Amino acid sequence: MGEAKRKSQSRAQILAAEPRCIYCTSKAETIEHMPPRAMFIDRQRPGTMEFGACEACNTGTRGADAVAALFARIHPRTTENAQGMRFVANLKSTVELHAPGVIEEITDTNRRKDEWAPHPSGILQRVVRITADGPRFMAHMKVFCAKLAMALYRYHVGEALPLDGAAWCQFALNAGMTQEHLDQRLTILPMFDTLRQGRKNVGNQFLYRYNTDNRTIVAAVAEFHRAMWITLFASSDQRIISLFLDEKMLQLPASVMAKPGGILGLLPAAPSLQ
Image (cartoon, rainbow, N blue to C red; front, side, top):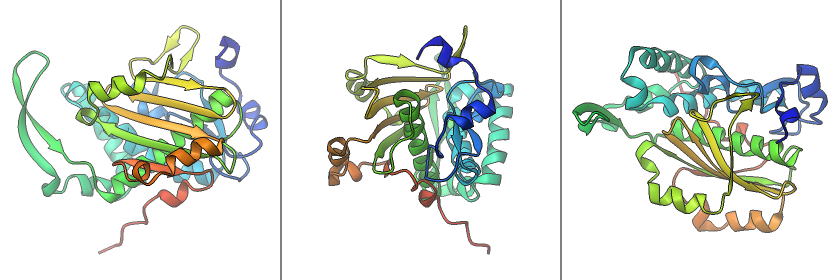
């Protein structure tokens, strides 16, 4: 993107440029930051990748944003210092508020395992390995992935993903993405970007490699805090979409296929009160 397009725009300018919510058919009435402020240290986020979204999609997916931000930061590099621990604690509180049931799901004793792992210094340290595959966690992560795919389509193509378009995404946490698999995906993605404004950028927290024709498709691998990876495709070309409707693609672990207007339907139902 040119430098002029990277400058922060006013709320009125952003909404005026958006014929509809970037996630559905409703009117754009709020400003959506994707990736969200919570993903960044001290919420310091360059003022780019801001889009118009409806109130329902923006506020209704706060839980998904919080879950993704939390799990992108649950890593020994983050939690080994007091500042990192405070940040994670604040995110945990946000998840409890906007994504009820997720924390209880991941803290289930059947999903936790104590083990020893090497510290960067070479010393072994005790860590708690969490198996994050519960239905509530998975649902929120799939929503976040779909949002990111649609936002990157809007950013690079210049308009919201059409209603007959679709996004396919797959995510991986820390050890879930091997260097071999990452290298295979990056070979077809020659360009890279991050949020940047002037000389400020957050490439050490969010970076994505991508390819696009700037008309009908965006393909990318996004990395958050070197602990979360999202592979995504968003396209309005029905030939491309048909490739991801293959049964094998739809059954890949931690993957989702979503269309504009369908994001809120991916969210889990509110947990029942005991």
